[in-house]
Amino acid sequence: MFVGNEEVRNNILELCKKNNYYPVIATDSEQLIKKIRGMSRAIVFMDHEVVNNYGARIYSRINVACSGCDVLFLCDQAHRDLIKEAMELGVYACIPAPCEEWEVLTMIRNILAKKKPR
Image (tube, rainbow, N blue to C red; front, side, top):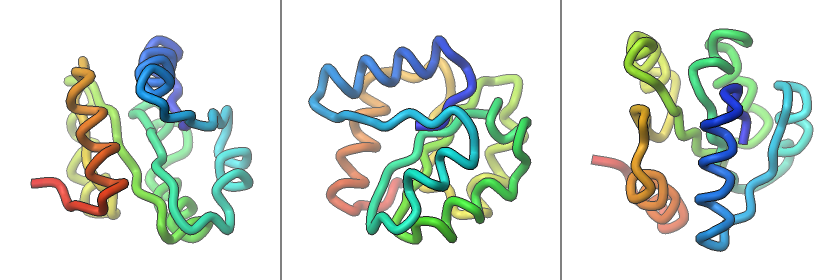
């Protein structure tokens, strides 16, 4: 999980733990890349703050480090302009804020079952 907004990060973390998913937290792009490098599969939560800080090339860095990674992009209304770019660069799905628990859990389950979003 690489989410810049602390409140969003904590909410997603608690939701995951409550449902027996135990994400790893990264505090910067280098730490994230190091943690996912060589993994065959991973789900990366990322928000608009990360993209604003590191730029769109963060998506390709994730794909190079872990070709089996699926990125879930969390985006508030003010940053919806980033969604098109994220989807074009291979993000699995975008979840608008405020996100509901069922949205996050459905995406996780779909990724684990390797279903594509509609």
